[in-house]
Amino acid sequence: NCPIEVLNLEMFCDLSKLRVLNFNENRIHRLSNSATKHCRFYDTLQTLSISKNLMKQFHLDLFNPFGSLQLLEAKHNAIMSIRGSFNSVAYLTLVLTKNKLKTLDLCRWNVPNMVILKLDYNNLTTIPTCLESLVNVTVLNLAHNQVTHATIQKFSQMKRLRELVLSFNNLATFTLNSSEYPASLETIELVNNNLTELDLSLIDKTNMIAELSVTVSKLAAIPQSIGNLKAALKIAFTNCTIEVLNLEMFCDLSKLRVLNFNENRIHRLFNSATKHCTLYDSLQMFSISRNLIKQFHLDLFNPFGSLQQLDVIHNGMVSLRDGFKSVAYSLALTKNKLKTLDLCKWNVPNMIILKLDYNNLTTIPTCLKSLVNVTVLNLAHNQVTHATIQNFAQMK
Picture 1 (cartoon, rainbow, N blue to C red):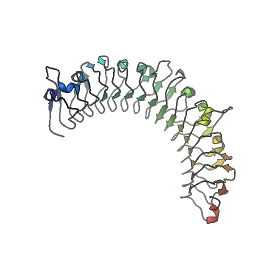
Picture 2 (cartoon, rainbow, N blue to C red):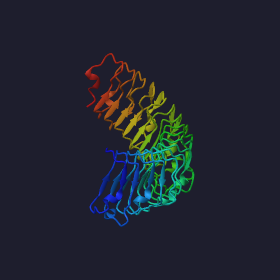
Picture 3 (cartoon, helix red, strand yellow):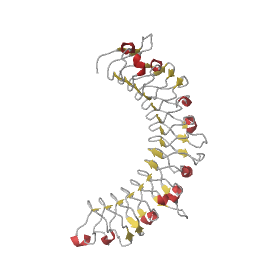
């Protein structure tokens, strides 16, 4: 936060113990290095930050000699172009967030040890070229750009890529139906795009994708190929236009812990599976809040032997159907339109939390003795007119 406008790295050449250089929030528009010898700080510098300055062009070749550099930050500079070849053996995190890059060509990059590349909040309209240069990058962040088209093949040569972030772009489709994809990929984030189609059909079933998140899109249906994500721990389709959900689609996902379908238009939830699904033994959390379910069939969840939390908040639900036999410890039915609730067909020995607040209940639910281990019962914001402590006497 000084009025520095020009920076010459040669000034630090002989500082053999220097680990960190920070020039954030200045007025630097020119960065150079006039050194004519091998500087001692090339072997020691680990962090250089020059964020929130005024650079329009950024010459990466200035950093080729820095063999120990771990973090290079040039955020929030309005950089429009990256210049020079980049040859670095450093185990580097490169952060170019919040600039004005429209394109990026990596074909002259030789960065065998780079681990993280952040390009979020730029003006990129296409995926950078020559991504195969990023052989050891584990995290690639392209969020908040203007990319309109992408396929998983674009990233297939990034063998170590674990996390791919493409949220807040203009993607209408994201093509995953390819046998070529990053072998180590675990997480794909596609939040806030214009997705109408997602095809996973040709993804090898040995893939390592652990998390798939699709949020704020026009996707109207879960792709049938979702069952190919055999390593998935968490799947989320939120704020989409999905209307019908069949749990059978996830039947063979034996590692799946979390399913999140909040903020869709789901009015029908069912399970057409005719066998014991491996999902029943792994799923721990299911959330289907802010949808359009009027009748909720609790018996759908009776087979789920590992379920811990079930959230069905804000659905306009008027009735709960069928008996509930579950090991779940938490059930949230907040902000619905329940007028009565009969617990006589419930067998929930592990339940400790039951939330029924913000409904239209006029009486205390019957058969509260079914809630033998419940420690928290929330009946706030209802229309109950009469209650005695005896109603709750069997809740030991």
